[in-house]
Image (cartoon, rainbow, N blue to C red; front, top):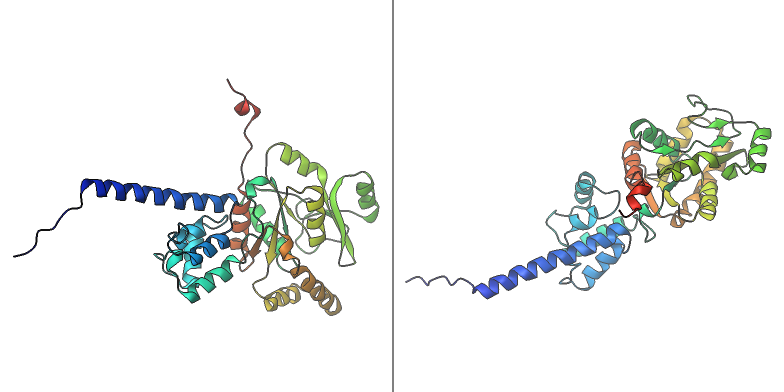
Length: 311
């Protein structure tokens, strides 16, 4: 005779339901901390490894990834596939090799515990030939809500560059005047050749209006902006590989062999500076890199003053 199945007492079902709700809230709090920059994803992974039964250990890998700024559902799925981790896996249930792959990936994410919402000014920089201009041009063409600062430079235009869109092309005398008048947020001599600088007026005006601004500048300029505006968010654009960056530099054909060799030596030093930046984005593809940068900016319009006033 078959035994009669016993249903759990009502009190047990209620307790189990309350425990499940508490667990979901605890996991949601962990995700919120990562999204706000209060904790890094690496911190969460370390806690899960230390105690697989902890709140962190119960978090799905998919949940952790989508809590990271600039990673949406589509990109998360691509990352999970590349890491060879099942969507159902929780952090506490990862195998040794899966943990190592995830840890290696997370180590290329934000290097500082800060939120992109802390700043209306985002700086995109990186080594020579990494594709900063290409990514910025893609953003200009496909994300009209993003305000890009146009730099001034003393170098001549390259084929396809447009005055007032790509750069403001000025001579040395005009550049000197802008420096003396305090019209530049930052400026630097790049590759011992030409000078580049960011006009301060358009940036100040955009930020005063509550808009986010993207600066596409060199490493020296990024450091100068960090000194002048510590609240700025710095994004470092990386090449997929060193060989690919060499291919891009040689392929664009804008420098002779001696200049190419010198710029590549400079690029090695520039790559070593990536730890100074808040975020790192790998430029496998200009469209994907642009999307990551825009996601980090969290483009928004500041609330009007009336929204801050109590009735």
